[in-house]
Image 1: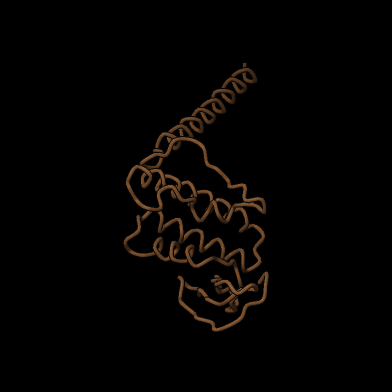
Image 2: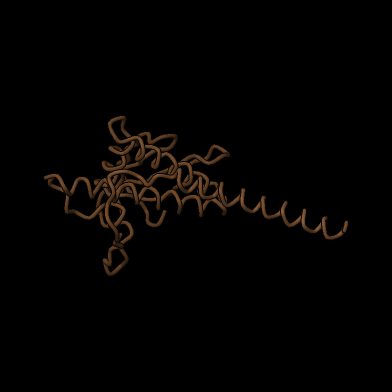
Length: 181
């Protein structure tokens, strides 16, 4: 943990791990995320303010969109692997964060169209990404109402692979023809 905590402590389950509410150094409420490692011990992962924990609880509820729930589950799995000391899990965690931030930015764009009271407030992800000078990370580009269609990417990769195989066999045939004549 980055700073000592003082009680009273309150525990709440979060997936396979726990959220632990306590007070930080200057007395403000802090909620730590503890996830189990493969050997059964609990490891500290990160700390959140109260508003961000409510936001995470909303994301993991059954009322949240499936894509956001899946993103949170992928992020939780990546953070658990990272807490276990798996150095390769850092890339997975970064990818899960990027995917979740993209989806949340899309949801924020959809909510900005509505009249919600917090539609213009910075997201928890951008508050966490803020540096010491409060320079928030901004995401540019239009907010889409749905994710991009992945079938075209898959079809393009398949066409490229088939083209490479066809060129290989054509070159092999020409080479054999030249050797045999």
